[in-house]
Image (cartoon, rainbow over all chains, first blue to last red; front, side, top):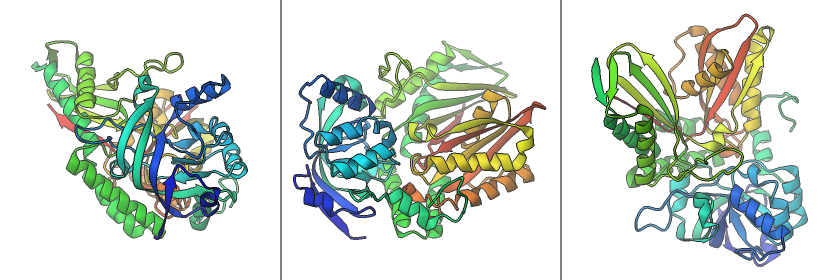
Length: 193
Length: 281
């Protein structure tokens, strides 16, 4: 499969416009990890009008909580966590400038609509491939909410981090496209393609 | 009576926590190979390559296969002729989990209480422990590292006896379909049927410990396992949920007699990181 190389943070909307559900991308640059507890704090900080621990503009958030690093390594195993748990928070972050999210699993209609509205993108990484994905992380540093342990916000420097475009700005959804291509049961009670 | 020092339990639990997280069982590795051959989607085949590579890196470098190193679920099969000495058995098990997760560079994923503080306990304790008393003077310890993503997609229903085989099939298929890409397919589907509300969930969890390809000894349930596997693999979810023919590597059923009024069924989904290790003392 040929891959599209992109750089994080995303400073130009044309990068987003070029991405279509099903594309394989290799992400290099700076991304941030955040999961449930960190999202709650970020949104609470936004509500109180406080400055965030990092500027969300153009950033990609990786829904992940790494395993501890062995001595001499930048990070432990680090694969994506299930994204739907961040659905209540994601539209708000997209509204203030977040561009990309990396996770695994389906998103809510609200998130998919917000991706279209604010020109964002949702990437799916291969869930569970955490030892493999850790090799793409060259540097890692906790920059906020250290008390959350694995859920702290980390700034990662990544090189050629592989992920698939799942939800694009055109309203496409790779999970739906993939499922409908291979589904062999016709049962509208189960799924409508 | 055979005396076993609890330190032996602690050391064994510690080792099993680490080994379960570094080394995928051979049956799962074999299933990846077969899965890649069966899969028709090019992206799906690519996912199998990545999973095999991931398993190789984890085992060689002794780092966790998945960053979610799970809830430590410990099954203790204790011979009735065994007497534990040297301390409290439950404390020894939890100490073993704490040491395994800390010294093994495994992620600590347990919070102190589910609703109020949700403060990380810092050493992945407490474990969920299931005890059973069996004949003999041995102790069999199984540690399963159960990830949150697939556990969250698990479901339980108290069906009517009239729902029968079709009702069970429909419920299992619906649970897997709704889970979609979330529980990290290719999955193993553990199904519990019968017993009571709590028993059926335990059966579903026990079911996923059986090696892939081992059928239920009762030919009727074995056939149901095969039928469910075939149906699930028609759902189109595929590896990583990107579409394909291999959504599940296997379906396992464990059953128990039940009340005349009941037909309990539980679905416990296991992600491809099917991590469990056992040892006998």
